[in-house]
Image (cartoon, rainbow, N blue to C red):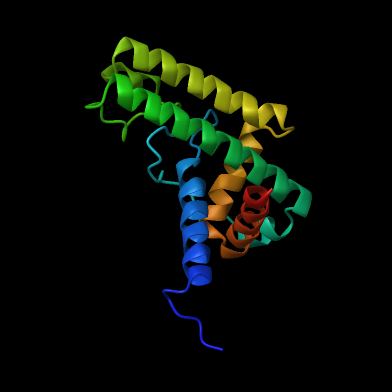
Length: 160
């Protein structure tokens, strides 16, 4: 059987893979606080693949749930800020860099600060420390096996 690149099944898998990679990138975390609002890819350090192999399936599933929840919040906040400040450049806005919020109008600053606090709370209320979340984010950037496991968990979460 040949799979055509234009078949619905192939396109759906491609879309899911793009969505998952975008979600992981968008929720990349730096310096232990919360995700970058713009969804841009942060510069992260590489990590050992041996460590990622020791990451349990439960931890991967929990991480994926957290990533999914933060991404849903990020998309909502991004749309809200675009409505009130459509010309705002969000590419340099990051929760770990409070001064980056200064370029936004006051209302957008408040929305972004709330987003940062909610993102942190999502991580913590799901039983993961910020440092462990950041570590897994960094590990998945350089470890294809861990990234694949997280992608598979995200696919299952999206199907529910």
